[in-house]
Structures are given as C-alpha cells and as structure tokens.
Length: 302
Image (cartoon, rainbow, N blue to C red; front, side, top):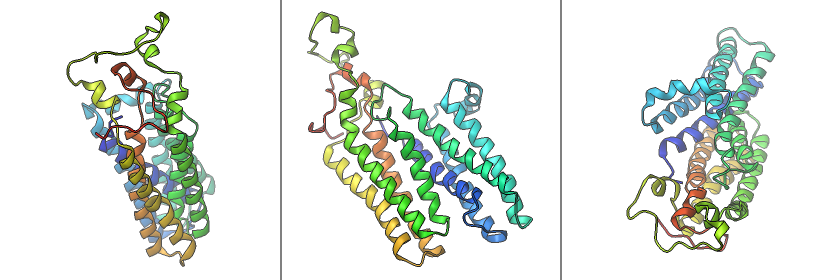
C-alpha cells in the first residue's frame, strides 16, 4: 500500500510516546519534580504530536471529531477514546509527581494500562483487515506493543531491561518479515476470487480493467523493489534495534546515552514502519493483474 508520511509519523511517534508514559505510570523511573516534568513532557510531545499528525491523512481534518462516535464497531474510534482517557489519567498522575512529590500507585498503573490499550487499538486498525494478509496476523499487534514497550524502556533507567526488550522485538520483526510474503499466498486470494469468475475455471487477465491510473492502483497496488526493501530492513534493524540495544547493554546508561539510543530507535522505527505500509498488498491488486506474493518473486520498483 502507498506509505502516507502522516500515518508513518503517527504510528511511530505515538507508539513511542505512549510507551514512555506507560513506563512512567509503572513507576520506572521513580522520579518527581523537574525530572518527572521533563520525561512526562517528552512522552506527551511524542504521543500528542503523533495523534495530531494522523489527522493530516484525512481529506477533511475537521472530520477527526467524528471518529469518537463509532467506538462500538471501529478500532479507529476506540483508539481515539482510549487515547483521550489515557492522556487525562496520566495527566493526573503527572501533576502529582511533578508538583506534589508523588501520586497514588494505582493511578499510574491505570494510566499505563490505558496507554498500552491505546497502542493495541492502533495496531488493530490494521490487524483486523483480512484484505491485507501481511497485517492480518497476531504479530501485528505484538510488534506495535513491542516497539512501544521496548522504546519506552529506554527511559526506565535500567539498560538491561531496555536492551533485552529491544532484541526481542527485533527478533519478532525479523520473523514477521520472513513470513510476510507467504501470508499473501496463504490467504487463498487469487485472480479467481478477485474477479468472482473462479466458478468458470482458470482466470487470466489479458488486459487491465482500466486504461489509466486510479486511486486503487496508487494506494492499494503500491510495490517496492526487493533490493530497496532489503536495504531498509537492515537500516531499520541496525538503527531501531541493534545500536540502541548495544548502548543500553554496554554503557553506563545515563540520560545522554538514553537520549541517543532513543533517537536512533525512533529513526529505525520510521524506516520499519515505512516498510510496514509499503509492503502491504491489498487483495484488490489481484483484480489489476498483480500476482500473489511469494518469497522468491522479484517485485517491480516503483
């Protein structure tokens, strides 16, 4: 699918921001006063900045308020409701820790759980889509939560925990990439199902259904060359996982190293999240003559 910059920024920034706020809610690190203010400010800046960037993907950003009304059936709406609830509860805990010297532990825990629930809701916007086999998989919510928790752990004050979590999420990401192409083939979607002509026998498309480009081809049939994808995978894992993990595990993990590790991690996650969208093929692309993905198929560069 076409990787919209606003959605990439949204998922990367908000995930890291809510991850930081979740760790603070669980009392890691246990800080008050100006130190607490700095960390809460960082978490809020990333989370809220990401949420605001998501509205740029809307044709009419004023419609963003309508998303809150469909929470019974829409994961997008649930995400909005949970995000507001999380930010409000976390704000109460933040006020206590910044200005009053502390806050009830239960309040921080509730805020942390709401932050993680928000990230889960974000992941389910994509994981629920059976029409995009790469996304319709348990690893999608696992990775969204994994990046939030691992990235947020970089402010926890415990380099060992942060390093181990980063390596675990990196292993999960590598597994998702290895399985990705096979998921499309295993979905059972073919030119027969895309056209609805399977009952007549084998189906082959002699001509494209349109003489020119259209929205579906631009947004749902986007393809990236395998060589470019491989380069981005290496960049994403090195910046997003390996270097931050090395800094967390091999250095006296103070504020400076934590800041550098977080900057590297965010840069890597942006590359990984770009691939998350760019490599996602919608089954409607089969209607336009695209073949189902297999690990051995070389794809065109767009």
